[in-house]
Amino acid sequence: MTGVSAEFRREIDAIGEVFAFLETFAGAQEIDEKTAFCINLVVEELFTNMVRHNEGGGDRISVSVERRDNRVHLELVDTDVEPFDPETAEVPPVESGIENRRPGGLGIYLVRKMVDDLNYDYETDARRMRISVTKTLEN
Amino acid sequence: MFEIKRNENGTIGLHGRLDASQVDKARAVFNQVSESCEVDFAELSYISSAGLGLLFGTQKKLVDTGGGLTLINLSPHIREIFQIAGFDNIFEIA
Image (cartoon, rainbow over all chains, first blue to last red; front, side, top):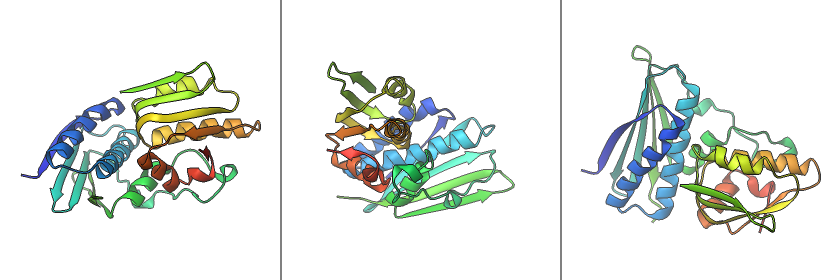
C-alpha cells in the first residue's frame, strides 16, 4: 500500500499534526528532501486556506497522500463549505517591485507553481470541496 | 518547532520551521524592528507563505523609511521559494 489518509482538526494549530503525518509518509516512501519540502508547503497552503476561508465548515479536514511510481498525489477534502476554486485566485504581480506588491495571495500561487497539476471539484449536494494535486518526484 | 532570536549585533536568527502556526511568535520580534538588519536563515529548514507575508510586511515598513532587511544563508529550497514569489526583487539576499 502506497497511500495513506487522515483527518485533522479545522485549526491552524493542527498543521504540526499534518506535518507529522506527511513526514511518516515521506519516510516510508523514501521521498527525496526537495519533494518532501514541496509536499509540506503545498498541503500547508491548501489546508490553511480551507481553515481560514471555510469558517463554519465541518470540524475535520481530510488529507490523503499516495505515491504512484515517480509521482505523489495529494488530496484535501473539506465538507459543509461554500465553493472556492483556487484557480480563480488572483495572481500576485511577482515581477513587480515592493511598491506595487501587496501582502497576501502568495499561498495558492506557490502551490500552482510547484505542482504538475491542480484539480478542483465541488459537490453541491454534499457541499464538499475536493482539491487534488500531483507532484513529480525531484530525485 | 520554531525559534527566533535577536542577537546583540541586531541580527535576527530563525531556527526550525516557520509555518502558519508559528508565525505569531516571529511577528512579536519583527514588530520590534525599526531599522535595517540582517535575518539569518542558516538554521531555518522550512518557510511557507505565512512567513513570507510577515517578512514582506516588515520590509515594506522599513523601505518606507529608507531601510530594509538583508537575508543571509538561505537554503537552496528556501531560496527557490523566494524566487518563485518574486521576493528576490524585494529583498537583498546575500
